[in-house]
Length: 84
Image (cartoon, rainbow, N blue to C red; front, side, top):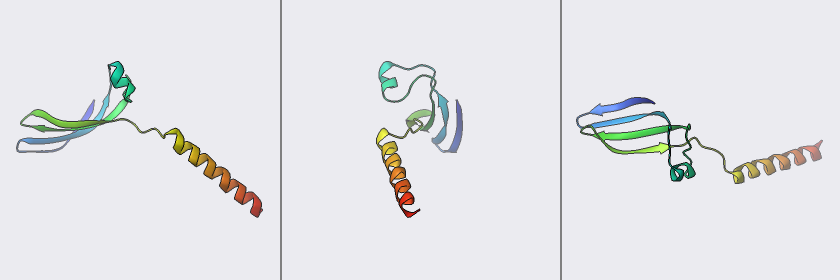
């Protein structure tokens, strides 16, 4: 785990960094957090106790986005071919 303190003042602390998941439940894996995944984390502490936070998985393009990109490239190639 690599975490950096972004701000510590009074009772509050804000932290962010990277964490590699070492174990997981089946339900957690189904939501995009498999064992071994390197994820971004950020969290807030209040009086030394965890207050809130989030896990951010690495983004992977959805299949629909890749399909739109592919069809756009094919259309652009077709238009370029007609001009030549």
